[in-house]
Amino acid sequence: MYGGSSPGGFSGPPNFILDVFPRDSLQDYEYRRSCFERAGVIEYVGVQDLGTPLVMWNCLVDGKFTPIEEDAAGFIRSTALPGLWIPMHALKGRDWSSIMAAIAQGISRRPHHEFMESIWTR
Image (cartoon, rainbow, N blue to C red):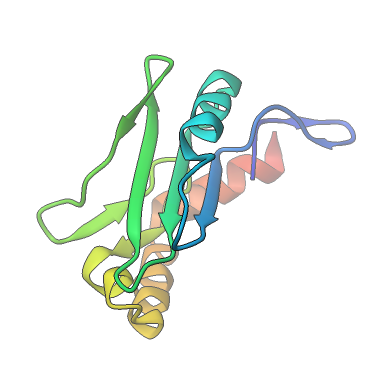
């Protein structure tokens, strides 16, 4: 997504990476997680495509990925992408309409607009 701007566009590692793994294998998850951690990606999410998706949301804290859990309201609220609000009950139930509604609500908030402004004015 955004790792800083340069005259030719963006530079540096992305803020956010989402990986989807097949239902029969998480074989590359730990390797990819380690690579993205070393590269300085702010958030890395691995999702295994099971009947109820397995979600492994990681946030870079002091150079190391730390697992992120849902908040008291049942959401994961991205720090890398302000306004990306994912209701975990909806994700686990594959309720795409509820997920899109939560994101629409999140991106209507000031932190999202300030983030977007910072991308285009740097």
